[in-house]
Length: 337
Image (cartoon, rainbow, N blue to C red; front, side, top):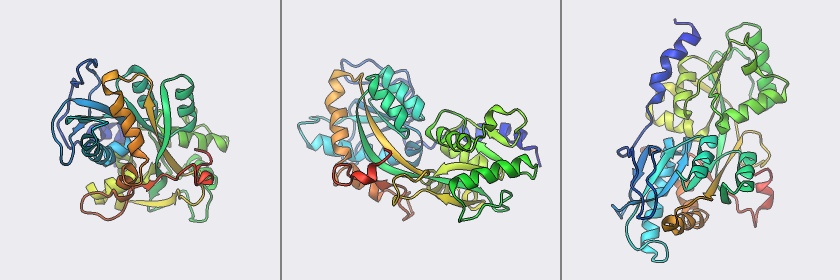
């Protein structure tokens, strides 16, 4: 067997491939007065019933794009918008631009995206304070998954708290028993979360050159979980990514165990992963009504929330995400968001 770090290097090309359902647009043609974007779209979507037209909305996100949720939202919104003459009078298309939370906010700032789906409240507050975004709403709930190998070298238990788990990971790994932890190490919300959990127990393995068990793997979610599975490593991932990989390559998820998962019952759960939708502050005037309409539609029970609450991978029945709480009528479920 190859040494873990060498194996990790060889796996890099494997994770570069993102599932794309439509052709790539390397220079996106936008509406008449909107500048073309040189940031590549990972996919471009038409509606389920409406096709063609220029790209008039660009949504940036990582995991929910890889899972297909962004595409499902785009298709349903196009159909809605074109049948609602106050939003669009002719067909248009929607780009998905791949980006983690940090990259997505940067794309709003540069005008390369109109809407960002992000997962870190403090980064979102900062974007609002700097007018990078002008509106923030609770879009859906994802859930972090702490996954690891079947041989469970860290001796994790279902009754362990999140901090117990991270203490065990560090203790057993430092003891040299073969425990590995794979980090996305990329400023994504997942990377920010696991860094917070490590630092909360007084540990910063990324700053410790002797912590060879801490594997830095800056790739998007599916690639990172693939690598963790192949390397028998613990990792922090999320439900949407796990179920997507399970549908695509079951053998990879069969090789890992779910040791801890976030839930909706406690809004302060450390592994709950709320997704915010941010409206960019640098919208092209011709497309502003499309982007603003998308934000309004996203929170409609029969609009974006219906798409979220029914979205599963093709051929499967498990729902990847849960709908967002109504922060007006259910304010306690929005604590921490």
